[in-house]
Structure formats: structure tokens, C-alpha cells
Length: 310
Image (cartoon, rainbow, N blue to C red; front, side, top):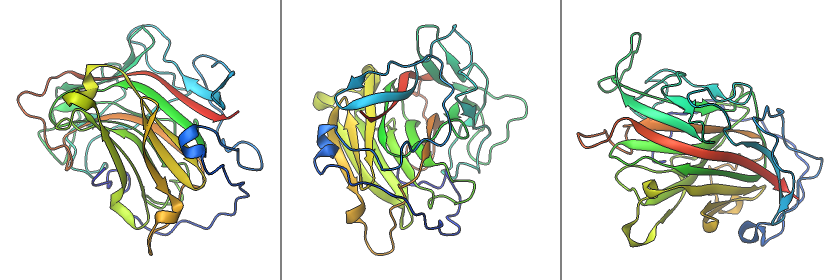
């Protein structure tokens, strides 16, 4: 959110120019939920390996094209045809984060009730190596890189975030061309980030060339001092060729537009992105956990769904 060097430590070379034939989406689509697809068919580049075939019916002008409902036995792993794991500790994340990511069921597994649970634990495992912090926290980070990516559509997850200082749950996307174009030239879309010291506030942002540390950021907070950790909430973006709109519980709270960029900034949201879910701990933005931070801390994901215009 504030510092995005966890994705790529240096921005490197500029992304190659891409020619795409796009049709303009309706001006009012950002807030009404309707839009027209890009000319030339689907923007999906990797077929999804789905846990359960999603319903294909239209919903308010959108049709479901990909999902994971996280059905499976308790303590089983997420579907490896759909998800891959990032593993290890700093310095590869770049934000001075404390956690060490693993692919163990203790850090990422199904609960048997239709949920994925990412769990941060205070523990030290053999072989852990971290450049920051006490190196005694494990957690989970999952991506669909190489499994599924898409440009444009509605990207949504229903999540209950954990509470506690230093916790940093996120649902986000990175450009699928990351093996050829270094971050931030490949683009980053943060659908949801919550930091423990602001339990009632959700942050959405985009990052690209020229807006790295301080991206285009939007925020909204629950009324009456409520916490997002008190229950499940739906986090989503509607992504169109010229804009990205953030929603909390189906209510829009911010828009980023290609036309608002300044000199030296580049809109890099014209190609497929893959999905990420992670529970970070510590780092430059949320700060370290304290003695009151509850461990184990759990980020519970009911579903992740992607829609295309009906």
C-alpha cells in the first residue's frame, strides 16, 4: 500500500508496448456494474483448474467465468491445479516483513466448511532464514501465477480478516507478464489490504511506473468504529480498460482512471493479471506485531470469483 517493493525490488526496464484492440466501455459502467467486453474475445490466457464448476448464470449484467469455492476436507490443501505457493522470508518481499511463507497445511488449508484459511503462527521451523525480525512467524501466500490470469472483469472475494497490530491481509493481482517485465511495469492491483492498527478501514490501490511507493490509493471505513475482523465482507474491483473501481460489500468507494495519470506515469492495466492471497505480518506499513497480537491469526476466505460481462 505505502511501499510496494515486496513485489519487485527494482523496477528495471520499461514494459514493451502492446497493441490491443479494445472497445470502449460504457461511461457509467464503473458504478452501475455493466460494461462491454473487449473486442477479440476472452482476455483469459491460462485455463482455470476449478474445484467446483461455478454457476454460469448472469448476475446484474455479469457472468461467472472462474471461481474457487474452497470445497474439500478439513486440513486438506487448496487445489494445486489452481494455486501455487510463494515461500520464504525477506529480503524477497522488500517491505521488511517478518513472516516466513510456507506451503504447509498449518499455514494454508481448507477448513471443511467451504473456506480457505491462511494462518500466521508464532513458531520457528528448521531451515527458516529471514533478514528482518526475529524469524519466528510463519504464514501463507498463494497465487494463481501460471494457472489463471485475466484482463478486465469483476474480481471478488469474501473474506474475514484477522485482528491485531502488525497483521496485513491482502487480496490483490499482479501482471502475468512479470517474468518478462519487472514490477511495477507489469502492474499491480490491490483489491483489498487491511492493516491491524486500522481495523475498520480497507485500502485499495494500483501501482505502476511513476506511482510506486505512493500508488493511486482509495480507502473507506466502516461506520461507528466497527472492525472488518468482526465478520465476512466482500471485496472487489470492476476492471475496465480505462478505469478500476473498488467496492466494499457492493458499495463503490473509489475509482482510478487512466486519464488522471501525470507526466512520467504509465497506465499498465491492459493485459492479464493473476490473483494473490496472503497474510503478511510486520513490515514498513503495518509495523511489527506487539504482545497483544493474537497468534495464531487467521484470514478466512469464503470464495474467490471472477466475472465477465454477460
